[in-house]
Image (cartoon, rainbow, N blue to C red):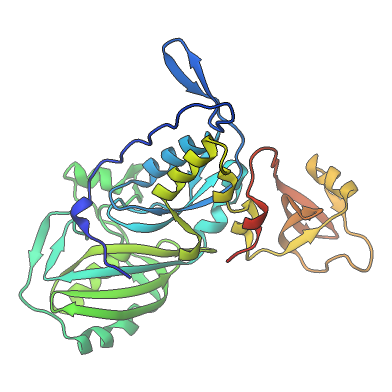
Length: 353
């Protein structure tokens, strides 16, 4: 895997060049006065963007919302501008499943530059401490078990954590001293994969919700008798979404242009809403029961084939996602009902690669 080049950090995102309007343009441009207005439409599914360096997560959501003319969109976990890789973006009814992705594991490949600590714990910050010491490979590998499992971690000063109603990064930018309390995080795996030179080390980490890789680099540097900060970062896994599911922005834009000329469909870029629910049991119901659940009414479980387990399930009817529900006390209680009328994933995207 190639390392990231941070020469592009802070660069602006080039606006998407609108395709020439034709009759079957899925973006449905309409003229209103001197401005072009595009009708928003119902689009449901996931797009796992391979986010480029220099783009914020908010910018990425806005770009995809525009490309699909989607009424609703949101992401499942912020990825810093300096980072590349997997940014799952939920469109339409998929936004109801965002918490299931955010609670899943994340995997990162990152490079730590030794000898400097920075106020943001990454390459974008100001240098706050330096050291001429450099750790050996043996010293690094001996340290890794201390950062595996459930550990206490102090989040970076520049983070989105709220302190008395304010974001920590806003307070830090205003010059306030932000003292964040340590909190438990879980790191499932942490591996040293390369050491290109004495100044850099490349790691892979798989971790749970709330883990800051920047803080990991900072803390390892301190214990090793030097200092450290992140100088390259790529996310390769978010919940059920891996690198195989990612699609670069230029490919999305090219697909949008082909769809505008009738040579393809944006549905080809979508993954089904239920992809986010891979770890949840599925429960099929009859059309009669589906009608009740769709109205928000509970359904009694009957017959010897009725499930005996309890907990969260996703309900399907005729192979189509219907609702998120709780099973217990002999009944199915709908919690979130899906209305998948509109553009959804192509049939071929219903099976994972």
